[in-house]
Length: 119
Figure 1 (cartoon, one colour):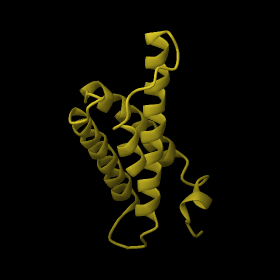
Figure 2 (figure 1 turned 90 degrees about the horizontal axis):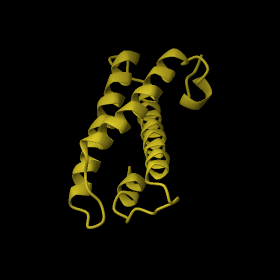
Figure 3 (figure 1 turned 180 degrees about the vertical axis):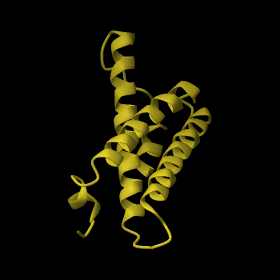
Figure 4 (figure 1 turned 60 degrees about the vertical axis):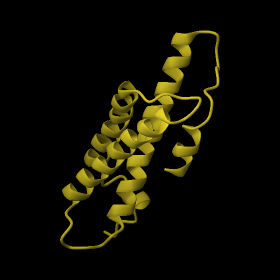
């Protein structure tokens, strides 16, 4: 979250001469970084071995935390000199989060070694 916060405070770098191509590149990075954020939040919550928190609850809580952070980051960008917060970016971030949510939910058995799950 700190890395996302710091990167969202910096001036945007133009990577190509095409606005459309830059847009696609940066929004793809948005989806990847927020998908990874969801994975890390879920991994952290999943490592808590508390009987009252179900797997479904951990997934939903990770989803809410990640989307909440995406919203707060866009609010943060409205106060940044070089950036501006946009609802569109929250939607794009949420797409990345949702893709990772679906992937983890459907492939939990494959991810056991990354989530420190004991068989």
